[in-house]
Structure formats: C-alpha cells, structure tokens
Length: 408
Image 1 (tube, rainbow, N blue to C red):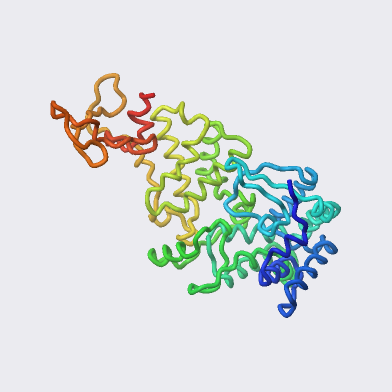
Image 2: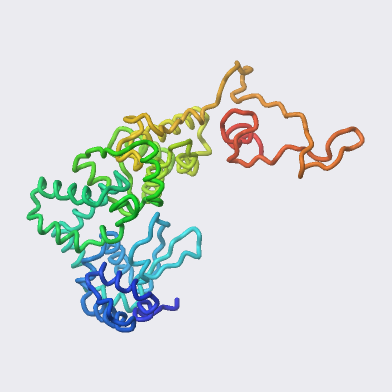
C-alpha cells in the first residue's frame, strides 16, 4: 500500500476546507493566511497536540482510531459500508479502500499511528469521564428521533436534560458543545431556517417537503432513556429495540439466522427503511429477504415475519412526523397485507398457491416480428419475469415466492 504523508493529505484540500477542518479540530486558522501557511500550521498542530484535536472528534472516530491503533500500523480492518463516512475517512487521516464491493477496508498509516498511539486510550477515557460522549449520544438521540430539529430547540432540549441530570453547570455543557463537531458537521441552514439534522438523513429537503405536505409542526416529547437509546451505536443506530415491537423484531431476526454484527446491521437497515413508508416500500423487507433462513420459510411463516417488520415500522418515530409514529397519526403505515396472497376462491385440495393459466400469446414489439405457418408467433410475447417481480398470476407475491418457487 502506497501511503500519502500527512503533509500531502493536507495540501490536497482547498483553502476554505483547511479552515473548516481546523475549526472542527479545535485549531482556528486565520483566513488571511495563504494556503501553504494554513497547511504548515495545521500540520504542526496535528503532530504536536494529538490529545487536543482527538478530544474534538466524535466518539465514533475516537473508537475507530483506537481499534486501528490496537490492530497496528498499515493493518487492514474490514468493515461494512455505513450510511455516512467518518470524519477521519473524509479527511484522509485514516486510509480506506472501497474497490471491493463486499468490504470497506480501513487502516492507519505509520505516520498517523506514531502520532495517536500514545494518546488515543487516554482521550477515550477522558471523554467518557467528563461526560462529553454522553452529551454527544443524547444529541444524536434527539437528531435520530426527529431527523431534523431547529437548532434553538436542539440546544434547549440538551440544556433541559443536562439540568435534570445534575451533571454540572450549563457553562460546561456549552464548552462541550463547542468542542464537539456534532453541531458543526450536521448544521443545516437554508430557506427553511437554522436546523441540525441526523447524519442518517440523506435529504433534508425531502423531510421538510413531507412535513409541509402533511402539516406536521409539533415535536413529540421523549424520555431521557428513549433519547439515550436512540443515540447509541453509531453509525449503526436502531431505535425502539426495547419496545415490544422492537424485541419481537430482534427475536425474529435471530431465529432467521442473524447474529453479531449482521444482526446489528439488519436492525439498523430496517429502522432506516421504516422512515420511507409514505408509500409501500419493498426495501423495508430486504433484511428479511436476505436472511439466512429466508428460503426455508413456508408461506404462513413468511407472512408472519412481514407482519412483525410492519408492526415495528409503524411503532417507531418518523422524521417527517416530527417524532410521532404511524400508529399515533394514522399516516404512512406500512402494510404487511400487501404481501399476503389473495384467496378469492377455494383452491383444489392439496394446492396451496393460486392457479395460473398461461395468457394467450400476443405479438409485441421486441418479441415477435411475424407469424409462422400455423399463425403462432415465432416466440412468446410475454416479458421475462425476474425473481423479485410480481408474479403474473396476480397473487401480489414476488415471482420467486409464488409460481417461481417451483421452477429451477
């Protein structure tokens, strides 16, 4: 692996990007300096004050540094693709390779290793002891529950929690917020106003548009325990796992063969897709379809699993509903019955799937250009049915779960 030096990495940024990076890492740089001066000043700071700039990282980044240091310099670690990258990866302080679509490879260069190795464990303990990571988790919790929240409201929520928790003076909370990159990195200022958004939100514009269309203005209140749970586990957040619906979801995924990290990812993906159920969202059921035991499920078990996924999706806070869920509002409910097979007539004994009669062949552009001597098309005019397409019989099931399951 050909490594770039820290100086080369910094030199690759634009002048304004260097200023922003310095601000995030606690080293405010004067905009009057030339780019070369900014590079030298930031390079000196990163090499000379590692404990200071690492204390300005989010918990996820510090723990990533710790894991890479413990693995050793230039030792590749394999991780899954998160919904959003870490600051360390974006800046190049941690090296990564995405050429393999199955793995996200990350490692730390010898130069950066030598800078952070003596300090990373101390920084981790210090941020835990001071409560800085706890403040960050609560902040992320509110953002994950609401998706997007006005900056003033966000600060007020944290202040109310901090006072009730008796952590200390509000000046200390202000200092930790100024030091944390949470607000700096996820601030959203536009025509809608001044907001902070969850790192998992892909399109703030879409959330605002949906809220406006649905006349959603009031934010739901949450307990500290709910907020803390919603902000834990970055970057693979999952909300509502301690509710009856969440516990049933986890138990189901375990029965289907998920465990360890794969279980965490399946739960996270279900939560993310549950945010997008204004209409039927097939991706909501993707972790279920991808589960190790999915091919062995009979129809009754499959529909039972779909119901568990839908009940979970309808029970969790939604971003465009300002933290309310679909059951409370009656809006954007996931409908598991869309996967259910209609039975409008009695089936013959021993037959447990809809009967399907091959349609009369027709001529369609791209399939048959002329007729044979008997008047039969030279090729069927029926498009190819992919495994995940709706079954042509009209059952509402995917082809691979209906008539396709009996074919090779």
